[in-house]
Image 1 (cartoon, rainbow, N blue to C red):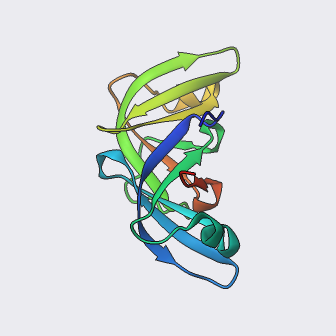
Image 2: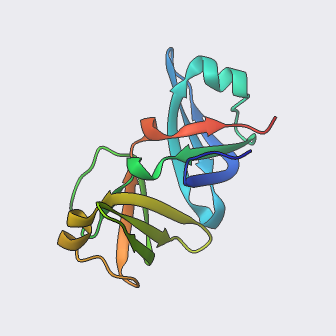
Amino acid sequence: MKTSARNHFAGPVTRVQRGAVNDEIEIQAAGGHKIVAIVTHESAEDLGLDVGAQAFALVKASSIVVVTDAEGAKFSARNRLTGTIARLVPGAVNTEVVIDLEGAAVAAIITNESCQSLALAVGGTATAIFKASSVIVGAPA
């Protein structure tokens, strides 16, 4: 499958919390990273998202918030992946930030102004933060 989403995390479902309308799904991705997603109960049933099932999580790079000093800060976003900045690709307006997660990577698109104000540099530490509701979940056919 090919998608336009830059971030693709695959692995087994490790936790399911069922709800009347939405279910919370946790996927164990490469490198031991856990991705939490909120999907409708009907979608979870249709996809067979039970503990042990294989699934993948897609996250658009524009849905990622990059943080450099998250210690002590509180965020409502469930997903937080910390790693080393592997690549910065500046454009006319935005910069692509790729964070190496040791076994995985996450790409974010942020404004050039934000890149400068965060003083991002290759080799520095950064955290990618995104909401569980920004995750699209799929399952192998």
